[in-house]
Image 1 (cartoon, rainbow, N blue to C red):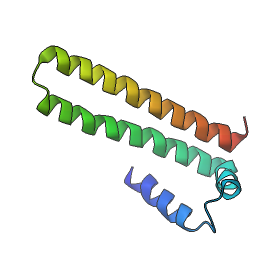
Image 2: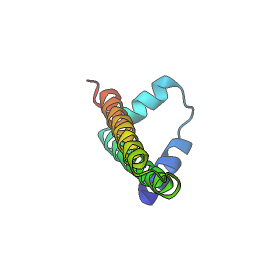
Image 3: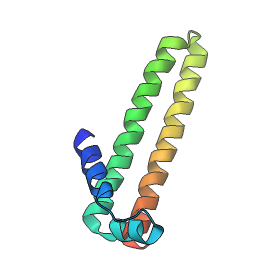
Image 4: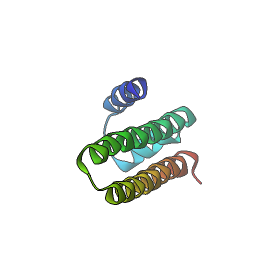
Length: 94
């Protein structure tokens, strides 16, 4: 994630502007689209791991802990899948 994050920051900071047309052209490049999708997936997973630790540390009821972990897992999975899906939709024009 460190390498993908550094790549993303350096690449996006090199863009002239962050207007829709420029970002769409950036994502239209297959390499940029694939790397951005991988970054989205890695960020969603990293976020899930962080939230999991917080839930396990601070939720003391076993049932509520289990339920909270399942909700967190479902939410992070949905956000990750949607992010990757829309990045690829923009990137590959589908």
